[in-house]
Length: 190
Image 1 (cartoon, rainbow, N blue to C red):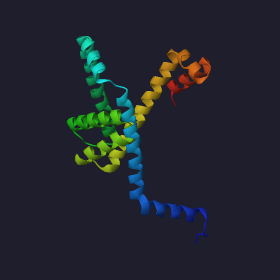
Image 2: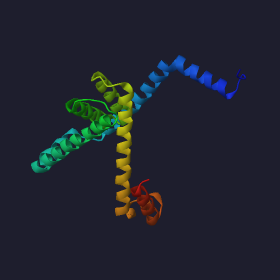
Image 3: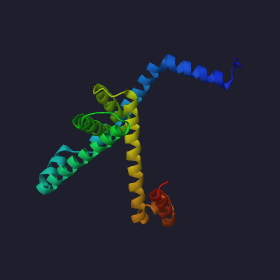
């Protein structure tokens, strides 16, 4: 029998409290995230002037605009590869066209709203579940996506530090040789 007030008892009380109030706690969390999202969008939109955007678009060379659109399309096609490889990793059978639509939607929302694992993860959870994928496999695929993206960012950052440590060194008050050493360790891997 547990003693009153022991660590196990407090843990049980905390779990019971969470179970009893979880809907309200999630609602409060959703409200806080919604408020933060609104503030971020409000500040972002305040920085843009519609007339300036139109004028910049009109004065930009059509070839540059076309190349930018092409690069955007290529990047979204490449991003579908994250989902496709993650689903194959967890042995989930999903047709590529469903994977591509889901990935496109998830990345578009998460890149706009932020909190990628939460926003994009929710889109993936709903759409892959509708495609008949088990929730545990979807969760593993989302985690695999996040890990792959994280390792990609880490590797790209390490390569950038090897290339131009002098650009970062003064910002974080760290000698260039230390940054290059850390970058070499990251690139070397486990």
